[in-house]
Image (cartoon, rainbow, N blue to C red; front, top):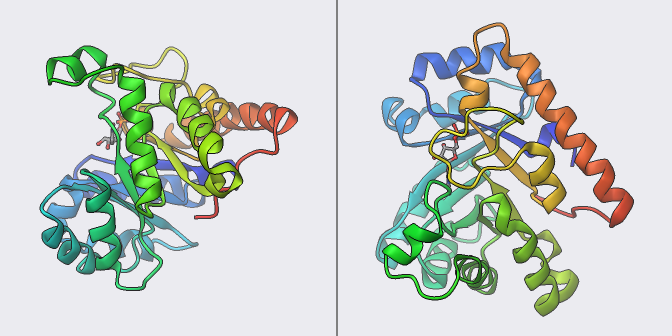
Length: 254
Ligand code: C5P
């Protein structure tokens, strides 16, 4: 995949501002993440608006669906069909229920949330978590993989561990399992509430397939956003070149 295909810009601004961002970024950005704000403000139709913005625009609908299995299944069956990626929060059973809800369709690809990037190891233990956060995140990735999910959302610091544990257990079969990394910041950028933030270079170097970046792009002044996106691509490309030099690289197919 090209760097352009691997950057997902999160639209967490108002509907009007999000439309202005898409317009300004034009052909530079292909993949957008829609969260609760734009989804609700647009009564669900914003997904089609983004796709209609043209030139193969793709949508990651991030609603972190978390409910009893039958409700997850029905929700999944009701998702707009032009969504490429979506998120779930729960167990392997949640992933299996979502697969049922897809009803034979290959999309959207199902990503299980491992642990919010605004929470850290102390929060994990504070909420009763046992052992290390790393082991917990890896175990959730394995659970998602075994249940037939297509990937996970994980912060960059865990990407390497997830990749190597999956490869150890499942070999090349797990190569296409998607690792989607939020909380990414250009060097020196405001990390906001993310307790575990990486640069685009570090995230790609660690083995991320997709990077999710919202405010570093969206909150840049109008007229400057393309420049920011180009800096992100350059940082990603440098890491990708190094990875290809060291390994065979990513084989993500979604
Ligand atoms: O603006 P920023 O780059 O921090 O946006 C990150 C996006 O990724 C937000 O839309 C947030 O909801 C999402 N996200 C996250 N951490 C997760 C899962 C999703 O930050 N673990």
